[in-house]
Image (cartoon, rainbow, N blue to C red):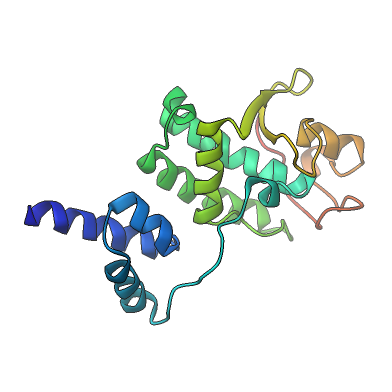
Length: 191
């Protein structure tokens, strides 16, 4: 019994260090809210953020953020397999998010790429993938899977193709600012 409690506490510490919200950590670990908040204060020397988690629709609020979310989901799916569409694979989620941040950092080194998806938004995307609120769609033109959601502000089209069509893609030179998206200077993803 004590070893299980210790393992859940260690998992909570790891999740909190990644920046996960206390409500999610509590849900994942089953620890009491007061304990998770106390751990958060010890780790971050601050009280936890309050408020709602982002929605998939908020995460997919532009073509550029849809492309970024698609990259995260591609990494998550590659690590967790088809099971990621049935239930959240926590280890795959954490590893995919770490890899996503590394790629985001490399791509953004030459310019501004927009804000990275944090671990909380990553969890929301993974959750909504399991419920069907977010879907992986296949683009026949560029032959990649991308993330889409009904009722989002972005069209149910491939974000890479949309960036290319709008002149926001410069082949090997990267992405240049598109009219309604953030400025970008990035290497194109390998297909």
